[in-house]
Length: 411
Image (cartoon, rainbow, N blue to C red; front, top):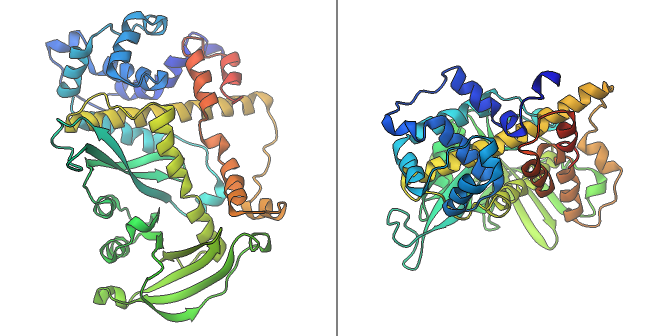
């Protein structure tokens, strides 16, 4: 750690982005306006904005002009017009490139038991209100909005793909545009679509999607329901079938699917999938993890004060979300780097990761919510609580030394 003491926590946070620029991995033409605000400083300002939770462009400008933090980091004291100009001047493709490099090159902690199931992406959409005069963000006669279509990695606990479109855009179509080979997609009932199922299969991908109870199908074979006895008290009436879908395309009518049916908290769940290699338990488990994307939307909207966008042009909105997600990736990476440093300092013998199945055997569940809470606790090292984010804000200008490392692993 001695060689890093001259680094502030903010410097350490930004170091992966700084490396990208130093290695010339992204290129962008600059003009005379860059003397006032160049691309790298624009990114620094946006990361600062999202770490501090400014919540609006006006508050960001006030922070840049009066905050001792902004002074300590030598952030340019620019006004609204300069920042608006930067949103128009710099292409969103540069931010996309930085986002992709960070997602693909940074090494994140993960749960080995999940990794053994393959690459798992949770998918969903969320709305963000826009001013009524933003014509491109069509939603309704009374309001304008954009929709964020997101793929969130269960393996890394970070956003890995997204599409921004108007509020009327179709979630199924957006997912079709993001499908990748070999990936398993977890989704709720708004993703039920024969066309989507066909596209996933044709691209050699997989899905676990909750369908509606009126799903029309033909039973081919009843499969063994393999689930821990400790969970049978909260998940009842469990069935596992091999089926063929009716009322669909000829191609899909010749395809075998799997349907897992269960009851919990007086609700009936129909989980459709094309993964026959997993036990009934792991189908239920992966769908239970779907809740993590709802928590992520809550994080970016509430905790990170992301309800109000910094720019309202189509490209500006993309830059806003690329910068927000870059910040979240950098924050999680900093937390996990700090955890690794502590482990090295302690020089402790690594504790073998206890499987989820073994953890279940040690608990008596009174509700499915208690099961959800158990699997959520397993993710504590892979997520950032509001307490951790507050600690980060308070340490930004401090040296990234052993004291800071300990604080950044304590919450």
